[in-house]
Image 1 (cartoon, one colour):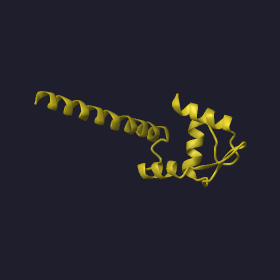
Image 2: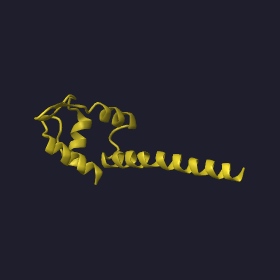
Image 3: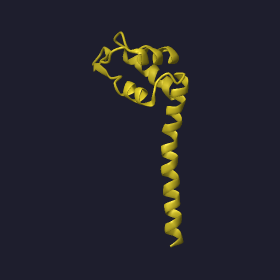
Image 4: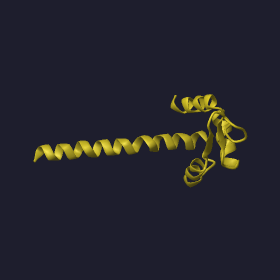
Amino acid sequence: MISLILEEKIRLFHNLHNMEQPLVIFRFLEKKLDERFTPCEIIHGLRDMNALEILGDGFVPTYSRNEFTDTLHAVFGFRTDYQINTNRHMRKVIAMTKS
């Protein structure tokens, strides 16, 4: 019985820890954007930032520029919204997000 309770507590701890990390990252993003956007605007803005891969050439943005994307690009120092982005450039952007 004690073993089951301990296992449940460990499982609960891991679940809470896994939920906490994305919330901290989201809050960091919200602060970096000077809290100019609501959580819904941030979520929808990120979800809408899609790109189409053209084999051999790179990625073409399939989203429209708006205040959110312009602010995001200005704050984080990269542009993905107005040109074909090579695979090399996109790897740099992805590496920036991981550091």
